[in-house]
Image 1 (cartoon, helix red, strand yellow):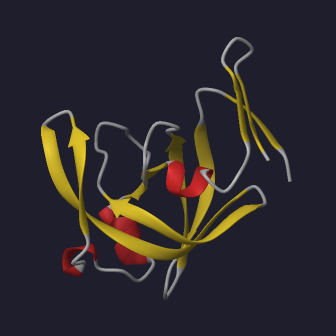
Image 2 (cartoon, helix red, strand yellow; image 1 turned 135 degrees about the vertical axis):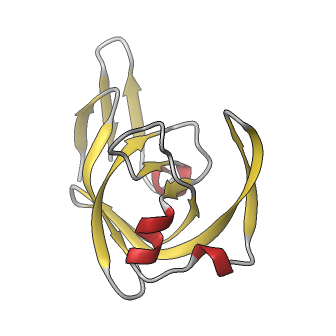
Length: 125
């Protein structure tokens, strides 16, 4: 299924599937982010405890390099696009009010992406 969206992209109602529940959240598209990220609260709500994850990865933030938990969730769905078994990092983004995560390459790599900055268009196929 082909999606035609305008940029900059805030993805509304992205379904995050976990071991015990699903939740819809708003996320921002970040084509330069290696990992898709969800908030700690979202991870807990869908059945994961990031605090016990032994798998941690370094990320660069405005405050420097920090290590964050990496977990594998059951899946992510947005407007008919679905990827199962997605690796995500758990990190809260307080500076982005009302955003509980970001869509990065661990989701996007499964699709053909076309960006047209001149006309403000993003296509995901």
